[in-house]
Image (cartoon, rainbow, N blue to C red; front, side, top):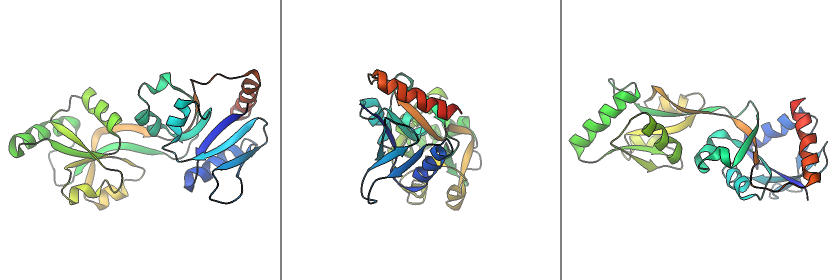
Length: 230
């Protein structure tokens, strides 16, 4: 049985993953056309390449359908409850960096911290009769973070794209989203709260905990680790 390595199937994450492994004398390459979601691995025996969306990789690791996977650390934490019991962090890869943050309109001149947000949320509910809406696709991470910091009187609104535009469209009052430079937030008249970096994400190589490894698979993984550790 081969060790299945899942990596992002397209874009800069795929390219950067190829470069990261190449720097460790392991060549990853796609098989056939761009429409095929399989590949080959040169430089180490016993590894099969599987191309998936970054969002699929945490669940495939957890289900045991792949053994190793490259994805954002934010996605693992969002998609897998008690993630440390389900996957192991093998290596932080040093690219794909972005922060999951909470941002509010620049016009909220008195709201700069989570305490300010909590007060604003209470005032908003008292005035409007419903809870302040925060648009995000990171429901688990945001909910846990706000609970830990004592923020109440809010509701999460699902947003799978163009999250920053929800405020302008009047479907949310605040956003929780990934940002690397903050340019899109600023372009939409938003500011990041001073103490509201929920998670600093980067591309990470993970190993699933729930798979039974054969002797040959363990030997393959040990060989891979030696190349990674240099």
